[in-house]
Length: 242
Length: 261
Image (cartoon, rainbow over all chains, first blue to last red; front, top):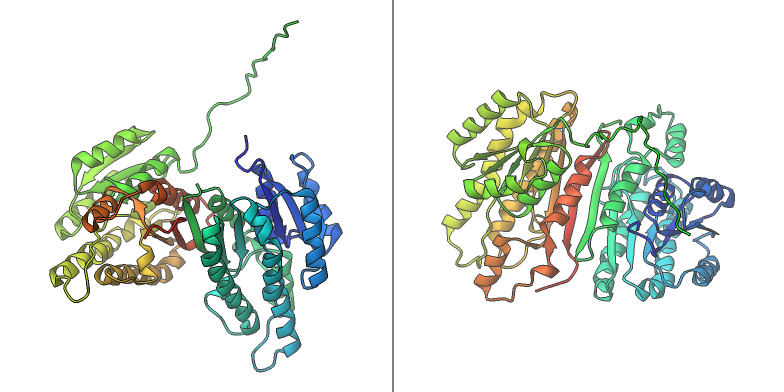
């Protein structure tokens, strides 16, 4: 029997990039996967490779910055899942800019998408996570550990997310829930490609991390015996490309 | 009605499959027990040729005997705090393999004590075995690790959670482990352009013979089943070692899920 048979998982940001790769990897190990994203067509395309995989995935569209939609998401998931075993938070936004000039509207947008949305998501799904012995995975960023120039606003949200993961871990460990935070450097995703296009730099995706690399380390940690808890993983491209 | 299952032989199916670490040469220090022993077994299981280094021949023999491809395992008993023995190791590896692909540093010592009373001799000893010996070993083996283009070197520092956050009663040990982290981080920056990757793993308490004696000395009940097992650490190490070469896992923090103290 595949290792994650009878496990229910939810992956946000599952329409592309890291979220999509993790959703596939979970399904490959037998989990029932709910893919969450804003764009139905992207989610449907992401599940195309699930045709041959059982159990069938759930496709759930939601704008996680909208409180009503988060509540609606929870209600929908509760119709299909008796509990939640694995929650993977891979949805978020990024913007570049200096602290001197980047608009505060971007600051607010990033905070809503990367910090507040995940906060509300966790609050909504904790009851379901507590029904079994759940696991929570924060797909953070290397900027969550060490800020760089030009990504001040984004680094701030990722540092905040790190704090949330650490506080949450201490609170939910006694309930049998493990919390992993992964801090990747640059990953070859559609979002990354856009960032490079905007900056006018040459995009060499093969030198970056691949979404499957992130999925591989996350799955390894998720599959470890319950006596162990991987709390943090830092992973980056080997080659320095900037 | 019985149905006979008809199985057709397929002559084109090959039963030979390439193991992930086939053709790679690995050295593991502290291979006689604990995490070093589990990592050795995991490396051998994935097809690596492993040289086991440790102080006690009998323990190394016992580990080698447990390895799946035991014919690909060999032992090299050595005291890593001796510069002479380091030279011997380097010469032996140079002669036998000419290159090195994986180095796992799992040898070290641990001691507890209050800051006010822990003997400075213990401080010196911990620094010697956990910091200086690793520094000298990496220095000695770097040329071998840089030699292969097919399998650029990988170095794993089996560190400890106290490298990131010191606790009461382990000041000397925490200091040594913090120092070891610094070595790994500096090293990583220096060898990155050679394509060499460097991983530090920071485990919390692992169920090992050393852990058992620590609990015994403290007169605390030793419940190994709620601690990390060496295989758990080996699992995350092997996962990182077998990732595509364009990725580098730099740090992994892993701990027992249950709080036992």
